[in-house]
Amino acid sequence: MELDELKSIWKMGAPSFQPKDEDEIAAMLKGKSTSIVDKLKRSAWFELIFTVVVSIGLLIYALTLPLGALKWISISILVMFLAYTFYYVKKLMVLNHFDPGNENIRAHLTSLIDNLSGYLKFYKRSYTVLYPVFFCLFLLFIAFEQGWDNFVENIAKPIVIINLSALAAFYFFMSTWVVNWYVKKLYGNHLEKLKKLLNDIHG
Amino acid sequence: MAIEEEKKFISLINEHQGLIHKICIMYENDPDVRNDLFQEIVFQLWKSFSSFRGESKITTWMYRIALNTAISGFRKQTRNVKTEDLKEMHFNISDSWGEDREENIQRLQWAIRQLSEIERAMIMMALEEVPYEEIAETIGITQNNVRVRMNRIREKLKKLMSN
Image (tube, rainbow over all chains, first blue to last red):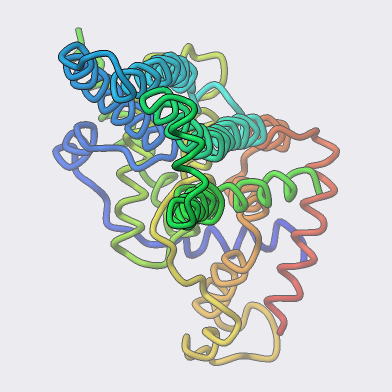
């Protein structure tokens, strides 16, 4: 069967459709996009606003605290949030430059895969690092608050060892299994689909 | 000025909406999801309209954005039409080609849906008489590669349609 034969069959019965009128088309321009880039943008905006709002709340709270473990924990979290704010702003700048109109399908898929992989890697790394950091900070500031000798004495008690082990197990579970599950649920499956499509173009 | 631009765009979509509908039909089975896809394509075209400088043909630009949206979209997954669904289409399979026009059309559309998303994009453009040069430009491969791939796609379609 030659291509011309296929063309003649295609032309005989182009798929039928219900044409949209101009009002319907005009309404579509005001809709909300479901594209992955727009979803990433919305996520980044949400996370940026959330981080800024929580940081302001935390700053106000930290200013009212007396010197001690809680104040230091609040300040450490604030410093981390500041680093996240820079990341979200940078991410939004990259996403705003994304224009599918200027790229062919291969370039579009490559950019999407790069963007999405970077985003997911960041998620995974930040949470994998974040939970152990919180755990160590928690211990450090308790030691700071109680004094080193008291801290060593308390930490040697069997009930404290059991509680700390349970807490460490919880942190480990959160920073590995839960993060992996969440990252995959977010966009992991879609990333696999995009990679398969790119391989198909190369194939 | 913005209203003028919007009017110009709407009239452009009105004129070429067949192209978008065909892509939606080939990439989505569910009518509701298909409608969402149509809307998403129009939305993406509108977003890029201001950056279109006429360096390529308007249809090439439309194919590029519409196919990018259809292929890489993050939509609710719907079931693809599988081989066994052919039976549900109640085809009256004739012995030779050309005997039943309606059957041939349905078979071709069904066979195209069995291809990979990239192959579907290539064959759709070829059937719409888009030159190989533009297909290559839209997909991001060489013209030679398009030729090789088109031969493979033609073979696949031949097999699928004769099963």
